[in-house]
Length: 173
Length: 215
Image (cartoon, rainbow over the protein chains, first blue to last red):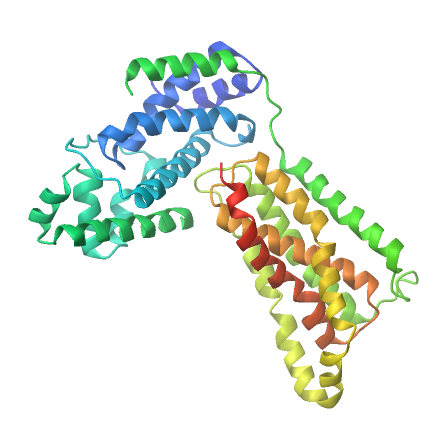
């Protein structure tokens, strides 16, 4: 099933009226869209968690969608908020990545608004490289250190500082 | 987590669905207006309105300052209300222009201050003046509370920015209420002790509110 804006908006309007079948369909479509959205932004093993968190947030904030406006920008705003929240948690926990590789995703207008590639260009090169290797490509700290030529401590520091700055940049977009 | 758990989650969320009443900025605006009117009416009843208000004959400087601050307050409140309904690509920055226009007050006050010299210095040190600032900050609590409750129930995607804007709107609302109470028509006084409620409340909003606006 294709995920097009008018269909999603209709499903959302029906969901706000309490139509469970429409809501189930909407959640299913949103899940597909979110999976693609996050695939460009985080390591693959975090995607399902973030999709679930976003679906729950969407459920809690259902009344904040204005039927006079498009649905996908609303969903993207919630997804972005959850993404920032995860970045903050990762920064706070100094959580380390695993070894999966990120998958590609289709370009979409809403995605382009917040391209991670664009945001990374706004970070110092060392921070951008550390985040790309560990948080997006899923390399370990040791592997990232070897590839980038940074010490392991510096990789961790660069991830910490870079994620902090990245969250600020995303909020200001 | 896997596909099955997301399927279960979707089933659970769909099963929990109840009709919701979409939030409208217009309805939030009524809360804000009620916050301003309620506190304004209370303070006017307690302290009395300035002497010339009933005659509708406020001097031009006081009138101009009132509407300048009011415009900044309306713009900030409108931005705060819109922040409760998220959407990538939406512009919440309109309030910056109105608040930027408020800088006309300190600039003009500086000219007056250095032009009038001694009299202006006396204005600054007058004992009642601090009370105007305190009243302004307190008078903004009605609007501040209305915006805070609106955004708590909404989905602000930048709680930090929302804290700033709530504070600025509340401070501007308070400053307009004080303008209805205080009989001073001195531009230095209005800038220092009325309009300064805007940055004071803005900083307070930034420091106090974001943690309660996260969701």
